[in-house]
Image (tube, rainbow, N blue to C red; front, side):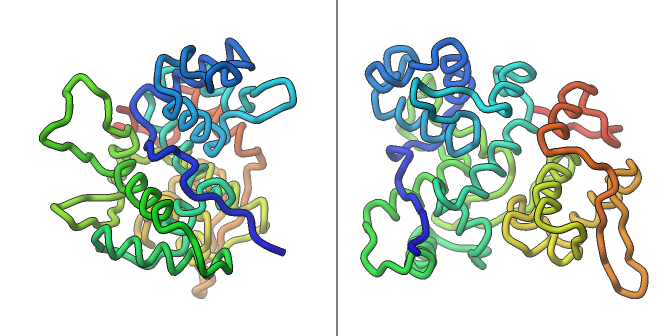
Length: 297
């Protein structure tokens, strides 16, 4: 059976500032918004940009397609209600983790965060690595060179603060995801980076960890660092950072950690679904061991 994958669904556009909140509001007001000129008129952008907004919203789990139109998912509704302008960094982390874990709609993102061993690289090296992984994953030897190159360009643009000399200062080309601190660019070289602890709220660690607990009732700390769609993979966290957040969640009576005799096992203690984790975050003033930290923008 062939695997499902997608490359270049974004029309060569990374997510720009204001796009997702504009799309969420438009879908909330009108489920048929994308049926008229691909939504370009309603969103106030070009046709290809409107298609990109729809793609990114679906890839992030914010909307779902139905026969009579598109509708916000429960996650989309929650963000519309609690952070409609996407001003909270936690919301960006949620969207990022959903995109990076979506192997069917954002295959290059999934491979980059979950499978690539690259730490420091150039754009050319990234292209070669992504091509190799795509060929293995899809079992296809002939993939579009242009599409893979476009995916690599958009991924790098999405997570780095790319500013060109001829950029119009009035045009919001910068992607808000650059502030997550997952990639750093120095000239033609890029480096995977670990985000600052005060930029990463424990609730997003719990949210990603909860998705892992859906597959297993107990997890080894090594799994939490190295497995696909783990906090370690999706957020570039090493053992020190993972143990930091595990300790916070244990203090909050959410999990139990057993490090005796080298077991390094983690057990779920507080039974809530992943959406409830986000509801609690938005409704309780973002309090989970929150003292002296700046988790917001």
